[in-house]
Length: 112
Image 1 (cartoon, rainbow, N blue to C red):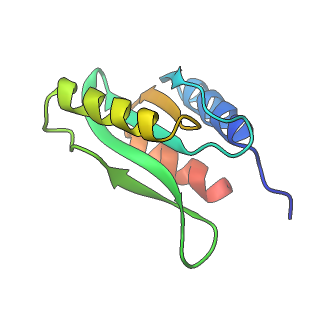
Image 2: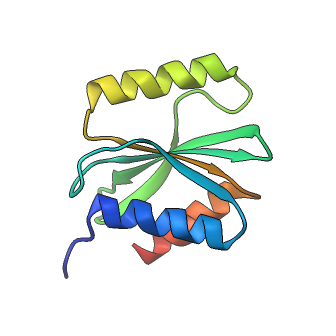
């Protein structure tokens, strides 16, 4: 089975979000083919979880909540993303603002 590129997956997530009436933006562009993907979820401007696509020991990929939780201030979340980007320059950071963003990411993740 062919492996989908990170760029293709990010573009798919952007289109799915926009088609569902939400806002999506790329905050950091990573490696086109194999970069990790970090999604900043929010709903009507209120911070939600940070989700990262990671390899699963069982094979394939899973989405895991990472970094500070939504109850922490925006600066903590921004600092976390900055540290992740510094440690992994191939990282994609995508912002979603849509109702129940984690559910959309989970549905999208099931397709990949």
